[in-house]
Amino acid sequence: MAKELDQMISLRQLPPDSSLAAFAKAIVHDLRNPLSTIIGFADILSRDRQGMTEEQLDNIASGILEAGDQLEEMLKTISHWPLQDIGSR
Image (cartoon, rainbow, N blue to C red; front, side):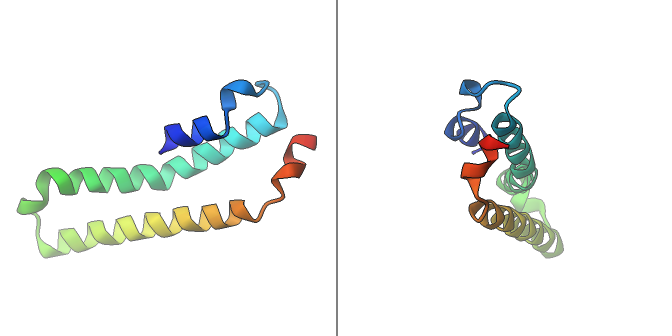
């Protein structure tokens, strides 16, 4: 998903010193954190679910939900920003 975000905002087409490029890189960086958490927990579950206790499974599920909530909040916040103003700053 992070690669898709990079492509969607076309970082490679922006001048490296533009404020929009810096903004886009910061957004992608911030979104990768919770996404990496979700992917990491999913990887653990896909490889070792059988040997886990109910408490371990609950902790992983809580971690996935927390990271998902964090990602959703970030996306809600971003969706309310006046993005047309960013490139002009």
